[in-house]
Length: 320
Ligand SMILES: NC(=O)c1ccc[n+]([C@@H]2O[C@H](COP(=O)([O-])OP(=O)(O)OC[C@H]3O[C@@H](n4cnc5c(N)ncnc54)[C@H](OP(=O)(O)O)[C@@H]3O)[C@@H](O)[C@H]2O)c1
Image (tube, rainbow, N blue to C red; front, top):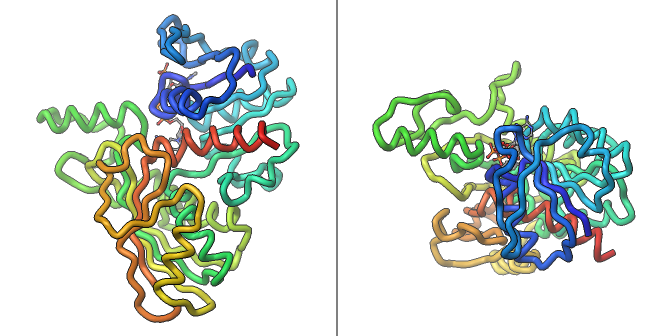
């Protein structure tokens, strides 16, 4: 297969290279694209050094089996339609197309069937939404979720490579503030993305709308507060759920454990425990009453929340 990665030098792009290798995807030719600043750099795939090329319109007019995009919304908006016009299938990590009616928004374990025999642009959901719906979808299937109250604890890597650099500089005492609206070192910031006219943050808006689209249920109410914390990798979420049907603690445990690529554990799990893992970890399950329960979940935002989900979409499509 011929695969291209757009944004290959970024946090997500580099993880995509690792996951393609780990999942043994039969790649014959891998092309790596980034900005002109990265042209001529080398990245390793299966022991081979591959040169990074500058992304241009012409490179997107070639035929690929899959193009994995992860270079931000503006790059996706411009280049993905060109690649699609030339017959390519694009799996896009940005928010550019997620809420478009005709574009599938895919978490393969939940709605991968939607992309069987599909061609064109496919959207990869937002990182905090992916790990939440993976933890909850079996519960929704059986017990019908009415309301989700979620507070996130999101790692700085969620804002890209430059955000990690800013965090390290601040830890070293340098007062740099280019990416985050406030200092993140020794601090937390209760806003992710811009604040919209309705006072929600962009990240909260994504969690509300993407959850409904992925679970294909527009009656679910999602009440998020998204928060940046001084952790490099791994998003955590404290989630309270109200279901229409009643259940027992054992049934909830069983439904979470049955979810593919979700690990239920009674151990304490932290972001440091999940780095480079391809599963969501769910713990601290508590039941308040027969229709209300709470969990804590943790996942590697770059893997589960981006690269791994994209490669799993590709896997579903090649294995159909
Ligand atoms: N980080 C996460 O947890 C996460 C999760 C889900 C989705 N996403 C989404 O994935 C995308 C990438 O995120 P990231 O964290 O990997 O960001 P990042 O570390 O900042 O990397 C950005 C990538 O985009 C490339 N790029 C920037 N401008 C470009 C241009 N004009 N032409 C071609 N390539 C260009 C960069 O190339 P250079 O190195 O040459 O600048 C780099 O490869 C974003 O849309 C983000 O919202 C991220």
